[in-house]
Image (spheres, one colour):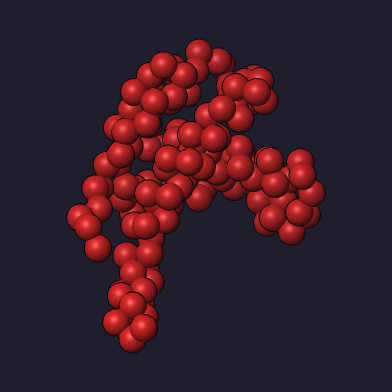
Length: 126
């Protein structure tokens, strides 16, 4: 595997941010923020599987991650609350989250969980 960067750059609504891979405390903060944003209903949204609940989960994940890992994120959006941001603007932000952040994060999680090692073993056996 090539050396995986611990930081990526993302551009959100004209602002450039350096996003670090979360540390232990940040990972916990992200999960707690997801619970808070969903008013404790995150699991119900997952189980619901409607178009709107899946969109809500994407929004919650995106906001929680970027709010914790990019402290100026909410301030730079210039809204008093993330709940005031229109869905079209939030979709643009979520698209960046899904296309840029998630693939990078998933690669790291594969390394941390040992899946990357499993892939290497499978490649050797093939």
